Image (tube, rainbow, N blue to C red; front, side):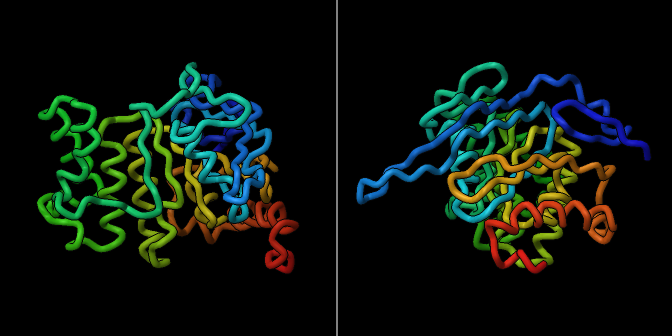
Length: 282
C-alpha cells in the first residue's frame, strides 16, 4: 500500500487519510522544562527545552531511559504538574490545571475494590456529573468493545491483571475525552498478556480515534502502536529524535517479524545506546 506524508513528520497509509484533518496540533509543547527540588534542597532538572506537537487523532509513543522525565511530561500535559518554563497548549488553550477532555491510564489499574467493573468505569462521568443514562450506555458499549460485558457486575479481585487494565482504559474513555494519556499501562503484565493488550489498544484506538500519548520502555511496543515515536535523552529529558512509523495499519503481531519493523526498532536502539551502555552491543 502506498504511503503518503502527513503533517508534523507523520507517515500514514492511504486508508488512514480520513482521520488526518489538518496540521494544527491538538497538543503543543514549546520550550518545556521542569525543575524539581530534592529533600536536600538540590535542584534536579527533569525536562529541558522539550518541543513536541501532536495532531488530533494521532498516536504518539514516547521512549527513553528511566528517569528521563517521561512520566513528568505526561503529568504536565494532564495539568497535574505545572512546568517551570515553556508552554503547554491543548486545543488552542494553555494548560493551567486538570482538564475534563483528558483521560489517563497509569501502570496500575487503581480500581476501587468496593465498586463493580461497571461502577469503576462510570466513576469519571459521576465526578463530572454527566448524564447518567448516556454515560451508562457509553460505558456498556466500551465494556463490550474490550470483551468485558459479561464481567460488568464483577469486582476487581475477580479479574486478571489484563482485565483490570481494560477496565482502566474504559474508565479513562468513559467521559469521551479528546486525549488519552497512558503511562506504561502494560508494564506490570506478563509478556503474552502485554501483547494481547497491545492488540486490544490498537483496536480501541481505531474505533475511538482518540489522540494518544503512550509512554513505554519497550521499543517494539512503541513502534507497533504509534504513528510517531518520540525518543528522549537521559535526564534532563530532551527530545533526541522523532521517528515516523511508516507501517500501514491495521498492524498485528506478525508486523513485529517484518524487516522494516526491525529496522525502525534498531534505529531507536541506536539513539538510546549512548545513554544505555547495555544496549551498545545489541
